[in-house]
Length: 112
View 1 (cartoon, rainbow, N blue to C red):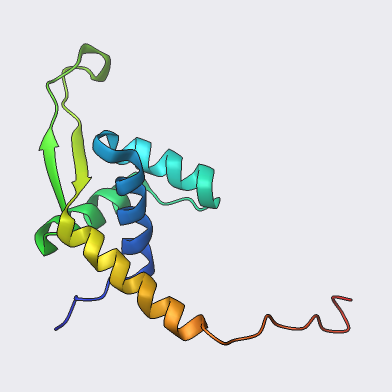
View 2 (cartoon, rainbow, N blue to C red; view 1 turned 120 degrees about the vertical axis):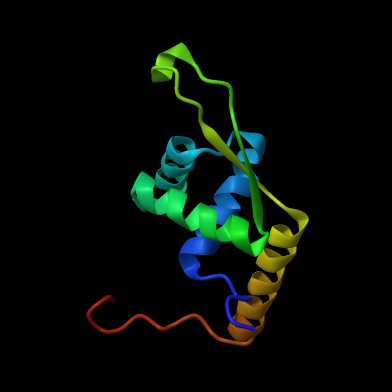
């Protein structure tokens, strides 16, 4: 089935949402991802990917109450679903199977 395997970006965002538990919203996801991986993903790309993940049933979202700090705007929070967790666990198992038995690469003469 198309879309049954999460892309690398989808996996990164799912794992970050899982790690943040109920506090996963655009800026928090971006900051946690940058802190842990050094990768920068634009907030707009995060939201468009999270909406796609929600359509797949891998996350759920809700809007917070409006806050004065944000000029009366609400935040959209994301939470990974059980199906999202199972999807990540399958993706990890697939990668573990592919890595199993491979030796670490030897340093080349340039690296030594």
